[in-house]
Amino acid sequence: MAHPQEDTLIARQITPTPMRLLVLEVLQRHPAALSLADVELLLGHADRITVHRTLKTFTEKGLVHRIEDGSGAVKFALCEPGCTPEHHQDLHAHFFCTRCRETSCLPTVAVPIIALPGAYQVQETSLVMKGLCENCASAG
Image 1 (cartoon, helix red, strand yellow):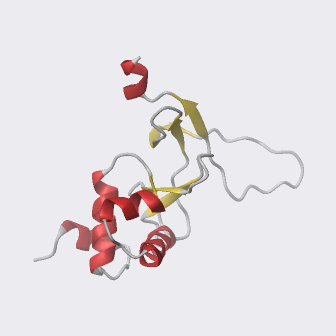
Image 2 (cartoon, one colour):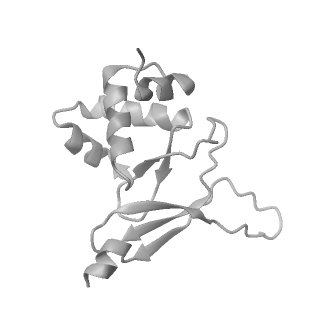
């Protein structure tokens, strides 16, 4: 009997290896985006290169998206169901908390379309807002 994580990987044409299943489980358990170092820490004694390759594969197959939040480490979060390897549909805002240093996806906050002059061609768009997350703001 297949596990939900295996089904998720197979649906994205990703071979379900033990490490890939573990990385997916870690990403599913944590609502905040995670860096490579975060994933390694949560897995315990995992090989850094294998975790890196797993996250790269997940990105290439449209399972996760990369977030550059200005913290110095690229973070990864699960994609919305409509993402494909050719087109990530994660044009939503992200929020970086300056206190707890967690990055959250805000899927209901769309990135606005900005008309650029002349022959500029947008290849990537991201919107990262910074401040205090709900938990840190309510803690005072």
